[in-house]
Image (cartoon, rainbow, N blue to C red):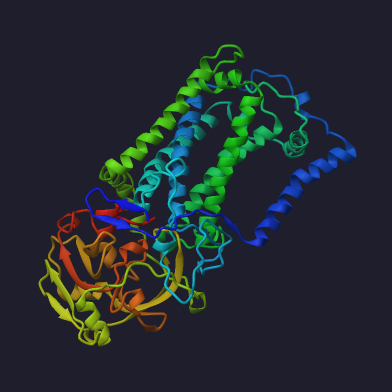
Length: 556
């Protein structure tokens, strides 16, 4: 049985089965087979029937003064910065994926509808398998941070690096079009397509084409590949990432619709990662095969010398530094996780609070969109108080509202219902990656705010659960009062037009639609209005934030 240790908490034991097994739906094998047939198969057919096509690299035009020559310092620098950040983003992304190791093309995430999964577990309908139970461990050789059972630290690494990866890309594009270097990457004729195919036929049939000196020219397939990586993969990665954000999905529904839906965006995000990995493998292989020392001089020192190993040594040093940083990152994740959480909050917490957190949710979904299956998460409360209330169908339940308010109150479910009701059909976004659409009915929190009249010093509302956190202690989370009064922010006692069941948070659960699911407290016992999230718990804004280093602001 695996044992996972939090730096300041007790040991927690997880189920012993943490195998990672890749399972593809049968139709995916047909798709992969068709893709291979449509590329490698047709290339071989052309070669066997008609012979090798003309190699366009054999007749490249001479280099003129208007053509780019060599690699300026900013291309070399941008290349290696991109390599460093991309490795971290991919490794942390794999750890995020491992927390819900299933990918879908539908919003419902109904078990057995995934097109690929990385777990041997089958979801049995006669017992509750929570999303936490389905999570996998990854070796630190593959994932970052590795082993540790928290998506919080993986997200910290991912989102700390994403802004710098994007900034590096933007500066690269600006410099590219400020010079004649754009001619290296951007095709100016549709002839690039048949020329690329001809080069591909040579490679696919193991007949190496003429290799132009990359200091002056790329072959057609190289140029098209680099263009695709820079101008297609990177924007698709950005847009598909945005499509998974609850703040963006609830305000700009067209973003996830670019990929079919929210889970389509997640699947495309994964496929983009695979695209990057395939490109890296092929790219490195070709660099080695076509003159390692010369190519490394090109991209490291900006010189064209096939004999001087200086660029090779410099490139190897950068690669070794990236590997060493991986060891350091693993150590930092285990020994200084709070530092990572603070850095993530300082960078993205500020960015999100000034941008996507300001978006107001809009209604999009209809009754026909409600998911046939909705994943359960969390452990049912075991307190005698909640169990006693549940036995009486919560007729004796009283919601306690206190803190920095003029009018502290205790309200029964009937009294809450008398204050008003709002119904919304929305998508639930779990931090682990799954989603589900449901109808929620309950009291708008703005009505509660009007009733209790919080003091002017209040910025935060704390919601306390009858349930416990993963590492013990009362589960709670906090929200800014601004998010609490946004449209569709409610205390729900109804799910899918039926009274809320214990598994999904009875008697009351929170819905704040621009946040991830862990912020939506279930089994609410009491509410407290406070001056700051730092006044509650360990001061990080919630039980998962305290113990598992999740984000205070969970807009994406």
